[in-house]
Length: 424
Ligand SMILES: C=C(O[C@H]1C=CC=C(C(=O)O)[C@@H]1O)C(=O)O
Image (spheres, rainbow, N blue to C red):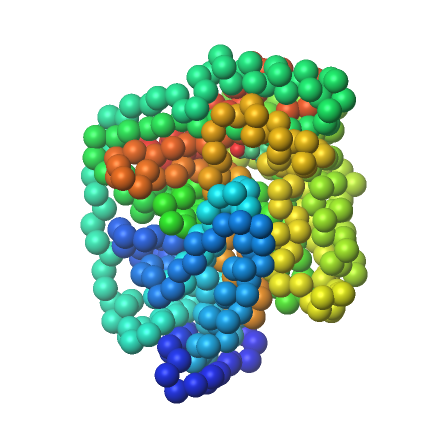
């Protein structure tokens, strides 16, 4: 545990109090129905509820605006933090649009945050709420399981989406670009309102190696870590290149085939390269394994590269904040393509939908500047005006050598992650 912090900017400033908890709570079990906020992996992370503050922002410079907003807001709080670890004290949850210049990014400061890190648990409250009362309040009962589900095509039906993939392969063949990630959406409607807590519980139970996230109605379990900052230490898990799971010996064969696939290796290398190029100017050291490893999930397997770096103490504009770093690395070629401008143009032209916050950075940031951002993948956006409906997303990297039917099957395997959570 690092030093405790007490800051008192002015007498009228809202108070933020963090106290240690004697027991380690099941974080997701604490959430109540409205406004569930989550970033949890293997029982550790943060959950939050209530809204002490909120920013919705879009346009060029959206992330710089958000960073300035959080710096102002967090500096104005009177903080009493007896825990003093990343994630204790004031925290903002964030869900950034895939294209922050065009679409809305959302930042929410919860009234209550409960965290757990390396077995140490704490609760942070903003304003008058008493930490003891907050923890004593039992979670409201879950709403019934969704029961019958109806699915409908989103922007493109499967055949049209395969047509878009063929068109993208044509552009790649013509030399316009090397890679583009094309996504599709699927609409689901249940007979009863969807309960985010039920979905998050099920996602966390089935995908323990993923980060189970929820911010402002966007929920999912992502295997991809865009960027974590702890002090000057930076880390990321880049994924690109996917194979389905099989039964018995077939599963082993598919795993070996993925590692040996020149097409998947090329797709993966572009994603790693895009992150490393963007991060390098901010780092004194950056370590990148030469070969990808395999990340095995219940529904798919990915090529994975874990990158770690040490941030420079200062650059031309001082030491970059986490949101500035996120702005610099996003979008990587894991969600956009190479070169990014050409890929973004092909996505806008061929996908036929707005991604919203799908494939954007999602996570949290504290007042010290520590935080974690994943990419919002394997997720669904709850529909604002229809509590029984959600929009699911899945995408695939397209390179020379991609096959539209195989890419369609890959989106189905990726949708299956959220569908399993819905169908329980
Ligand atoms: C864009 C998605 O996945 C990305 C992350 C991992 C593997 C990917 C792939 O193999 O295509 C994608 O780049 C998605 O799941 O919607």
